[in-house]
Structures are given as structure tokens and as C-alpha cells.
Length: 159
Image (cartoon, rainbow, N blue to C red; front, side):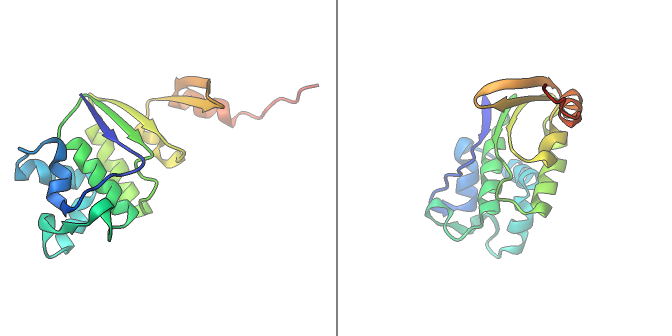
């Protein structure tokens, strides 16, 4: 019961709807609209003449990286899970779509466990706890506020 948004999105030839409902083939229109709004796809769908029936090429050919990521997010969330694993979910999104994603996730993640892998500081407000890794080892593990405070302290010189 994990919703997973991979860093490298895998899409297949078919319609936008086909690519979204992969995990939940029985999803109804209301559920599809909900995840489209959550992922930011609704803006893209509303301006395309074919809407959710628009064709998607193999590997998402013809779509931007941000659009592919939005489809991956919608696909992950079409089947609700108590655990969310997000691996660089916004690395190809423009700042507008990333901002939408952050606002939507603040509400969506309530009562869920979210594991977020990212190099982007602007995603930090989505977290309660931070685990900072360096060379494969945990160097900090605390609340977001405490980790940020520890990182902002001036480093002491070693004699």
C-alpha cells in the first residue's frame, strides 16, 4: 500500500486517461479529476481539445518533463495509499507547477506517511522530519526546524 512517484517517469502509448488509471483501472471520472487537480494536470487537460483522451506517445514522447511528472503523480495517487514515496517529484516542473504541487500536497499528505527524496529546499515545508545523508551515512536526523537550525549555525574552526 505505497503510492510511488519515481524520478524517471515511465509512460506508455495510449491516452492520458490510460496512463493515469494504470493502478486503478476501475477509477471513475470524479477520482480522475481529483488526481488531475492534485497533480496539476487539470490545467493541461483543460486546454487540450481531447482532454483526458489526448494521445500519449511511447515514453511520453511529445510531452514536457513536467507534464510527464504530473501524469506520474496522478497515477500514483489514483489509488489512495497510507504511504507516499516521492523521488524528486518536481525536478522537471516549472516553478508555477511546482508551487501548485506543494500547495496541493500540504493538504493531501494529512494522515499519511510521506517519504520525500529531493535536493530542492523549496519542498522542505512539506516535511516534518529531515534525514540528511552524506556519502551514504545519516549525518542529521531531527525535526525540520532543528535540522535547518543546525545547518545554519556557523561551523567552528578546528585547531
